[in-house]
Every structure is written in C-alpha cells, then in structure tokens.
Amino acid sequence: MNATGDDFELSESSFDHGSKIKLSFKTLPHIKTENTFGEYIVNAENNAIERFHLITETKNAPFQESGNSRYRTISSEREISLAKLPKSKKYFIASSKLTSKIEQTDETKSYTSFYDVTYIMTTTENEGDFKVKKNVSSSKDIFKIKYPYNTDYWNTQNQLLQTDEMLNFIKNVQNPANGFKVRSNIKN
Image 1 (cartoon, rainbow, N blue to C red):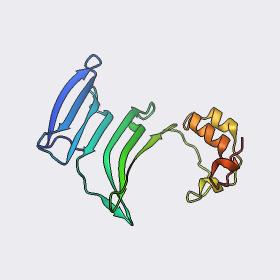
Image 2 (image 1 turned 30 degrees about the horizontal axis):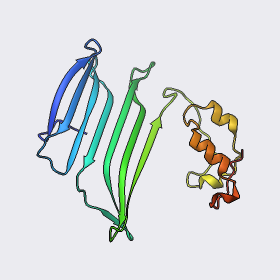
Image 3 (image 1 turned 90 degrees about the vertical axis):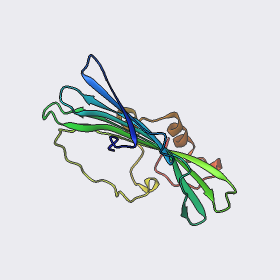
Image 4 (image 1 turned 45 degrees about the vertical axis):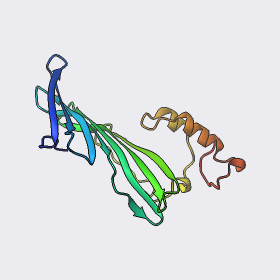
C-alpha cells in the first residue's frame, strides 16, 4: 500500500538507537468511507522494510450478494514481517497474517452474524535446497485423505501447533452423539 498520498497523515520517528524508523500513517478525517492506519518499520542502515502493519475499518460499505445471503467486510488487518537471509543478505517474508471481520445477513436483515477469519503464513528454510514430494491432491477434502493420523507429527512440528480446541475436536470427532456425520482418518 502506498500511504504517502494526499489522503494520509504521515509521521516519522526513530527508535532502537536510531537503527530503525517507524513511518506511521492514517487516513485524514475527510475520508468518510474507511479509516485506514498502520506503520512501516524500516531499517535505517539499508532502507529495507522489515515490518508492515495495516488496519482498515470500513464504514457503511455496500453488501455483496450471494443467493439470499448478503455480506460485507467490516475490517481487515494485515501484518507482514520480513527477515534477512544469512547467505544472500536478501529480505524475504518471514511471516504474515491477514485477519478479516465479515458481517453476514439475508435480504430482509432478519438476522446478522459476524465472522472472524485469520490466515497465518510462516516460512522456513528459505535458502534450503529441498525437494517437495506431492503426497495428496490439493483439491481433496481433508477428511477424505487416506493417511493415518500421526500424534508424533503434531507433537514435533512447530508450524501448526495443536491447540486445546483441536485436541477436543480430535477427541470428539468420532463420537456418534456429537450430531455431525463425519468420516475421518483422525483417531485418538
């Protein structure tokens, strides 16, 4: 996002003994449709962007329609952290996060529901030379994958940490009294 236009108020400050610069931005009050604000963190030694954070709150955005359902994005937040590769000294996206809040209703507005969704991306071994072996179709339903659930995998990897909610789901997914009709390879 280029937050240096006429619709933004900018401020600059240094920190970390002058080695970092924080460029903050926010929309001016005359912008009535949305409130956008955030910051860039820049390495003062090489002018590389090391972090980007952006929050957009929409005001009275029109609904989009899908059948009888109407929905709109109320707010979104993006955060990107960059890191320098040790060998090549190039910067890469080390992690990023996108969070959105969606409002959903029907044609007559007989109800309103709000949904929060978050996508998180992390990267590892960015300078590594490794082969990737495709072992499952990307279009396959996760519950139809024919590989056994491996507890050791979940306990040793560090990208998708097993939360209490996930453990409860695994525990209850095969329970016939749960009200869901689920076929799964997940076993306790």
